[in-house]
Amino acid sequence: MDGQGHGSPVTPGFESDAQHVSRRFIGLVKAREVRLTGSAAGFVAAGANLSVLNGGCGPVLTRGRVTIRDGGLRPP
Image (cartoon, rainbow, N blue to C red; front, side, top):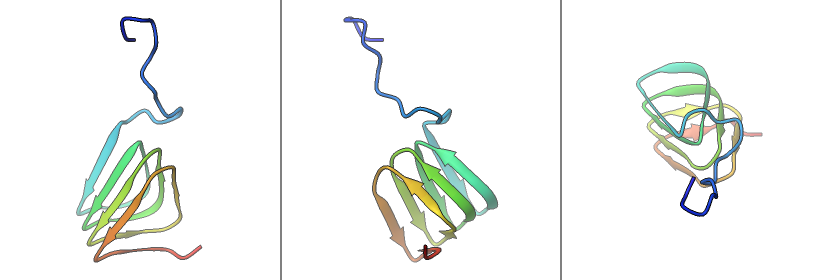
């Protein structure tokens, strides 16, 4: 909380603020900020932004930007 009794904005249901996955094959990634580097994920739930570099994933739920470089996402 700040000095005026207000809490910082938080996306409900996301225990982790950031998740950086490197060189892995995983089924589910859930965090506020998700970055996949050389990795594959089945499902991604990002409370804010998703970044994919040399990797890919299946279905995506995100409230922010999606950045893809030399990778891809599963079509809807």
